[in-house]
Image 1 (cartoon, rainbow, N blue to C red):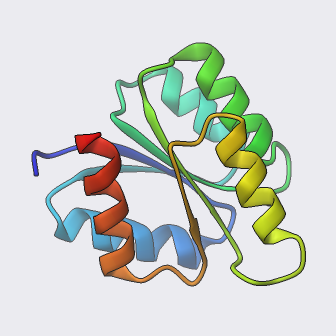
Image 2: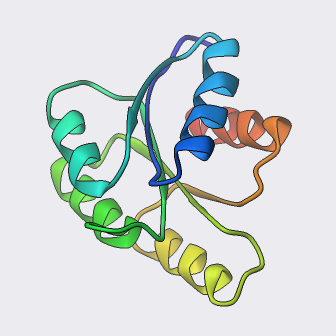
Image 3: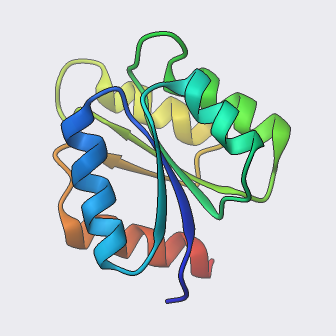
Length: 124
């Protein structure tokens, strides 16, 4: 796979760093944001192939972030992530997909699942 420019938006610093490490090891360029507002600011300043965004965040949550990303650019691919089987998260992920996410992943995210999802979305 070619090198992708990926924006990772998650309020959990450990998750951001873990995702960034996986993506950099797979030869992608990664920019990190701690919430939707910072993510949108960075998105406006760069040309990203893919945005990976958490759903539940302070400031601007992921559903709103996805909707705003879609308003700004229909082409950029989006993966929504959320805390797995905790109550309500399946509903949030389903909603994210309906509102414009190209793919969804439940936390904890396994390296293979993440890279497979990116391959599938980028080759679709």
